Amino acid sequence: MLSIGIVGLPNVGKSTLFNALTRSKQADAQNYPFCTIEPNVGVVEVPDERLAPLAKVSKAAKIIPTAIEFIDIAGIVKGASEGEGLGNKFLSHIREVDAIAQVVRAFSDSNVTHVQNRVDPKDDADIINLELVLADWQTVSKRLKTAQGKAKGVIPKEVKTEIEVLTRLDAHLQAGRPARQLEWNEDELSLVRDLHLLTMKPMMYVVNVDDQEATSQEQKTIIEEGVPHVYVSAKTEAELGELSLEDAKEFMKDLGMEQSGLDKIILAGYKLLNLITFITSGVQETRAWTCPAGTLGPQAAGVIHTDFIKGYIKADVANWKEFVEAGGWNGVKEQGKMKLVGKDYVVQDGDVCYFHVAT
Image (cartoon, rainbow, N blue to C red; front, top):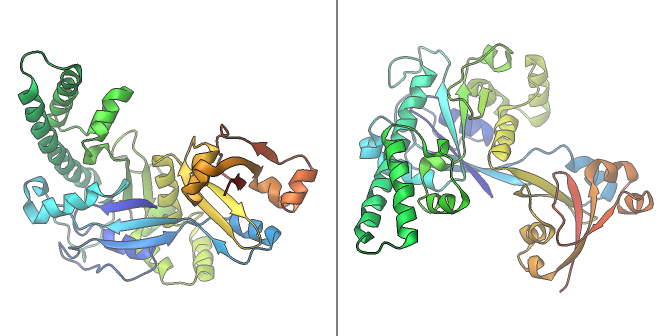
């Protein structure tokens, strides 16, 4: 399951946003730093408008969307990489997630104190990013010393490569820049991945804006070029979270919102991690499954059950829209819109698949 860690300074709206996204009051959202100590975890169904029409056509007994895990990680403060404000503990929680949603505050509210006593989203991000960079620099520096200790006499090629990569990384991090800004070849990337660096994780900025700015089309704050930005009002999202799904849709319509904050963040998360959704649909259930873009048929089948990878023979595949329009499997077969594919087929987003496997 995809996991996204929600991080940021204290009192920027992380827990309010988490509660809204998970439609819960699981995270204590109060007006003081370190309100969250242990991370809150919430599993959210991924909204997918394709599932209902597919289920109707297949006369499916139930619909099972794919899910995403949100983890509300306690507020990080300046000095976290040195253990300030329980920083080491908080940073270790970030290492466990697939992607990071960094919340920065762009809303004004005199009733909610800011730990820096001012509202400056870029400065918020600079503080968090520097702590992540410093934590990574500590990791790289230790690894570099270990590698240099092996460099005696005839230096093996892999040790030489490791030292070169680590030296480059060390200088880059010391300059205060995240590791994701560097380019690597495949061999180097394998070595860098092994370090589990915080600043190599895919990241988006979630800019917590005032209510009216969430739907505004005006140019909004850009924190870092090349990194996705999602603009939400945690306050508005919290209000939506209190309503039934139908009432929430009406409220969004009144506000001129085309997408909820949840939809925006999930979409950005899927793009960040280069994920797609394929679907299985029959009488028992219509179900969404997630896999990386570029996944071949056997590996996609393996998402359903690992035994399917070895037993994969072939798959029936149809585009979801054509599947609905044709009235199901019989219709797409008759209209010649069903493909029978082998092990080299690359599964596409929105594919409806029926896997033939040996048992």
